[in-house]
Length: 385
Image 1 (cartoon, helix red, strand yellow):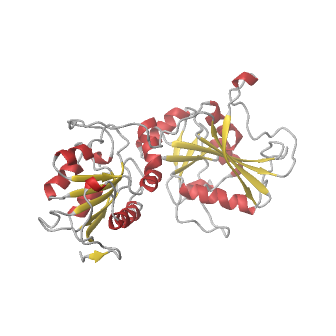
Image 2: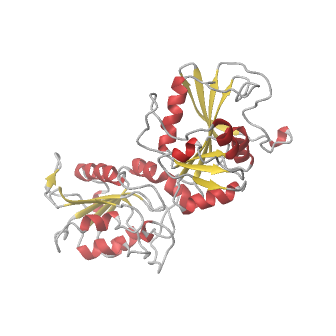
Image 3: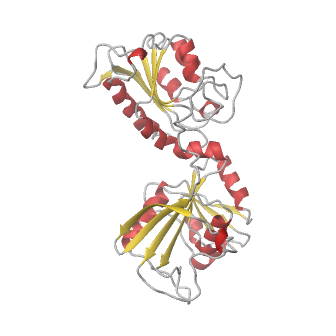
């Protein structure tokens, strides 16, 4: 691979004692984050790596391409001839793993390649794979952490939440009139909200790993469950369609023409469905299945985020946006924290989350890591790729 120098390449990279990454390393980290985004979302985190020469030139780049493929660091190192990485700096978006899964520890691969310095953005958030930095330091490498940590945290946020909670993050969406109705009394609902709100919904669908609807909604509305442009053409990202319920879905249903093969779960056990989706590496679920399914996710305490599109229209009648959410008395009300309120044309988007809920995908900035011994084995993480 041809060498490429950064515009601000320096003759010498700083050592750990200087307490900060150089401009070259920060640029390399931003490049590593770009590389990481090329990898798929799934059971393993998206990770990118850049190998720099002592003069700040790019020697190699790599990223993790999903389960069963090389880790980002190993992918980059594989492009170099033996000893070409000796004395080089490895810039990685996530702390090099420190356990043996289907592949060996990345920390060991870097040590054996002769890397002299490692700069990484984010501590590995899992107990299983953490400790790579300690292992690198014990082997005499300079190690620096923290550059572009916020961007790296955002990149693996949903994966971290999946690993820690054992289920995907769930966003429940509905559109309603100002008086809390999802449809007129005759069942018509297209359209309560305007074009700007619907455009926002499709953009969010495209960013989700899966979109969930109930069999009742599929039977009544025949939704395509695709993410679309205003002209009806498909957006680049398409969520996996998931249908929940015991009723059969018609052979000619629009969802069966989805560009991705739909999954059908003939059950009302939402916990079981989320567990099954987690096993497939689904990190974020977008629930858009009508009042019955939305109410069920809220009632079961599985709604991590609510997207409520409110239109300035009155409908009256009995078609409520939510039904039974498990609140028999005011003392049992499900309190929310409003994260944002955004105008979308004539409509409002209210984003809310359960009050007091801890985000399992967030970085723990208070914990301190003490040097640890190398674990013999560990569980699911990039190391099990």
